[in-house]
Length: 375
Ligand SMILES: Cc1cc2nc3c(=O)[nH]c(=O)nc-3n(C[C@H](O)[C@H](O)[C@H](O)COP(=O)(O)OP(=O)(O)OC[C@H]3O[C@@H](n4cnc5c(N)ncnc54)[C@H](O)[C@@H]3O)c2cc1C
Image 1 (cartoon, protein in one colour):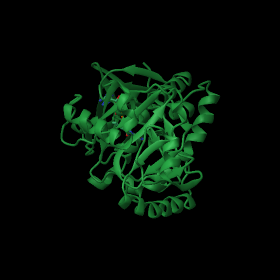
Image 2 (tube, protein in one colour; image 1 turned 90 degrees about the vertical axis):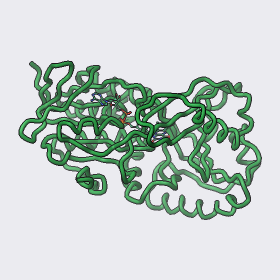
Image 3 (spheres, rainbow, N blue to C red; image 1 turned 135 degrees about the horizontal axis):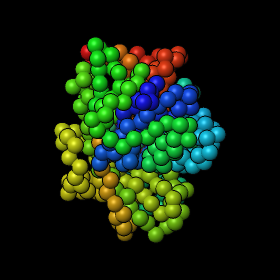
């Protein structure tokens, strides 16, 4: 019988990164993933640009800056393990104003982004105000702008490629990858492993990276209040085959556009609370996503609808990630609650969880993300 140093529950970006880094540290690791429909990593858009993000609460930013800085290190690690492609590239970002009133707010946004860059935000690059014509030339389907800010260093990542690269790297380093549903096994307040298809898989530590499904592990005493937030997101196909050079488009609203080679435009996304794990493409969701996309970029009206993807973002009550030891269960560590930012945070947060599970020191202050805050 193989006794693991660590079992990882969940094979999205967070669990894949935890398993990869554990395996790199020569731990014996088994990752168990149920491959649920609606895995957030498989549906996520892929914007990587914390310096231009106006939404998240303050404690998010130091973590996000480290996480995006970590991408460079990850790239080196994966190359060392013979994994050449992991889906991350720099593409730039436009923050657009679609009215005079929004245009008057752009200088303030520019000031915030500059402050973030000075505070060490990676993936910002050069930033300037553009007039409507300059902005529209960078993303041809957009029209009728009133101005924009351009940040040249913003990045995008293909979540599926990133996840698969991490899993491939983990496999190459000796991790066992198992498809199945894992149930946490706790004895006398201590995680001793997981049960998969009736079989016990023992471990000296368990990393819980089960995304939006996290609170279902509460039955074992590891309750952490993470709930699913459904996101419906459209993948459009356009005739122009140079979409790879188009920047991400965001604005004073929660929707966005981003592109992937060769001719794909991704229009996202709904943020639906209270629908549980209902894996449906809905009329309301389709209407919301397409009407917001066409409001900014009427030139997309003739695009073909490739597919709609659905993902369940793992969301915590205060909107911050949940990373750390599970209260009341020794040897169990959680990495969840990555919300709308898990593709940019996931590789680093998985690495942090891997370090915790091995008792390694972590220099970053993670107290704002402690699972104990919900106790
Ligand atoms: C529409 C949409 C757009 C997004 N856009 C962006 C973006 O632009 N930028 C960004 O940074 N982030 C974005 N995100 C967020 C990001 O995708 C998520 O935060 C991130 O992927 C979460 O990763 P995870 O590994 O925690 O969870 P998931 O990817 O959901 O993976 C969890 C895995 O755990 C498995 N699992 C659960 N329970 C068990 C169990 N008991 N046993 C075995 N396996 C189990 C599930 O099957 C699943 O495979 C977006 C998300 C969505 C839905």
